[in-house]
Length: 584
Image (cartoon, rainbow, N blue to C red; front, side, top):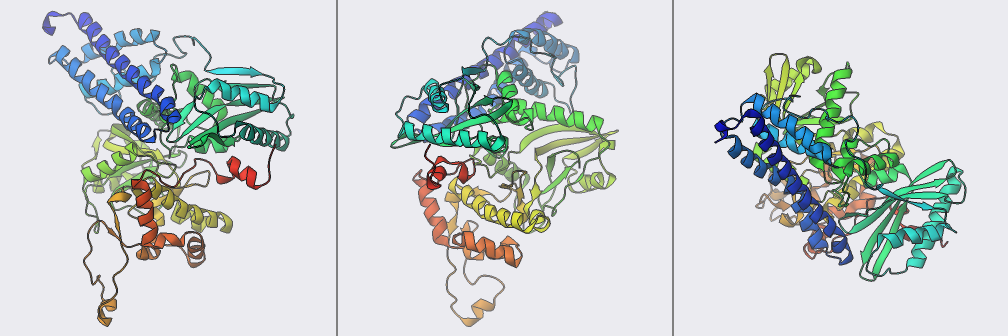
């Protein structure tokens, strides 16, 4: 039938089909997101986890459905460049009425690349850059509410909390408000600001993630602007304010690339991202979109950042610092804070995995609660860069160890599949190059990272320091996923006693070992720490060498009562204020 339609009519129908798919996706996205408040108020943590997983897979499902519909519509004409370019032109006009036009552009790109496969990007077929230099629509309402000067800081905090409209009672709201006010006044004094808040700008929507809720905004005191976050937990006794964050770095950690995505009901994400950047000006726009659950558009923004950088820099991609991996090859640019990872064609012994298994591990991490300890790697396909962007040594190695994924097309390097993630300093390098105190703190956090992963039902598999890295905030994060597994699938055991003297002399165990058998007594030999740092690790985390520790965590995970994990440093918690004698 489509042969009877003019190109312009076909383009119009195709564009509207893609737009219908996008609008259906957004309706479902918001429906799930709005459930987060109910989940929090009902302490329905299992339901929150189900919602998070469903929302992560939603866009891919919507894209697949839309691709099928467009394929039926075009009936063999999908490879006609003029037709698809016309679909894009009509679609651009349609989304000019959308408050979330930037997300609509990304949705189109996802459909376009499936309908019209190609390497690299094509400005006639893709929204390489947005079609709109300024927002095509105006905000119907400011993303934040302004609170004018109150009688006291306590009164201001109470007004902000009241507007969050939590249904359950607080355990002790007066106590928590007093503690928050005390912290705010201490911070104002520390930065030399007035002891009053002249006005506050608070994002209208509450942020939800895992078992917590957050109110975010900014406080204005004279010429000082202070970022502001209240963290709430819903305990059996009632809601409590667990922490107040008043520093850009603390809030950046809260929204880190190593954490799961927020559920926040915002009809116009563009405005929300711009406000969050006022709070965290060093945070990438891409990372903010990703943190809000719009990971596909975050990838779009990230790819635009990469294209812009390689266009205006003299730097070249080169092999990343650190010990070479047996499964992945990683490269970066000296002046760029992102890392590109490609799966090798073959894996060196003792690795016994394959390409699909590695991809499955990365998907597990994408779907899982990362809890600030697993780096968020974004998956890309059919990347295309100029050959001149690569050092000859890197290009030679890529073609040697990853020829199934990397190829040359004239003056271009085409990468069929890659992961792009934030570049951090490998822990094995960090502890050798940092000062002694920083190295000690990193080793302590290394052990805590392993424990936090266990609390989220993750066992890293390979505990070597080369598989962990240190972020700019000093947090240790795991990033090598080819041996990762669910903690509840592991069998933690003690070494059986030797039967004979000769058993201790053997190079191989004198007992049978299955793939999921783990012997924590062996962990010390895998840490790779020099003696003084190993002693620091033992002082704080010797329990990691005991099978009973791991079995106890398994029990708690299975009972849905894991050890708590907080996305901020322990001294930011109000309980720490109480211990220090703060009262307000």
